[in-house]
Image (cartoon, rainbow, N blue to C red; front, side, top):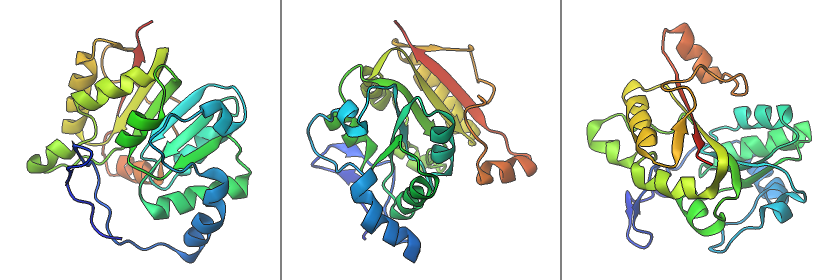
Length: 231
């Protein structure tokens, strides 16, 4: 696996991630080999039928960048009435979430291992999502890399089209300057309304990750932002 270039001339957008050769455990690789065909959805540049993908009609929520998938699994188990389409590019995280799905017999998660920008653009119908989770996106904290941050006005403009009227967007970050940027971008989107007027208290539905718990012990803060799409 090689580094993904910062700019993909074919797709005309700056990547918000870089794929590097990373360590994948034998269990994670085995999960990808055996379980991804069961719980994964291949990327295709055609509209995805979400009801068919999950085998039922239920509220559909997308998580963009689920990391190792622990929070995704916890949320899905606590909300069996909802379906979760989990997007991630990094293979170790995909393998880990697949293991969690299999071990805990979770039936309401499907995974697409692909660039979220392209998945949203090519596969997700307008007004088809009840919610979107973006938890701890890469902050690209060096100023010269800020352009690579996922949450920018053009992306949010595309994303909000996919959310149903009354649906929500929940973003969490532990980088203050990114939180400030996200709040400005979301507040400027005419189809979104802040549910609290500023930063939101951490919703009970978002579990604390091990990384977040460690940060809190060290005195780090986390900023949650919950916006709702106008009816």
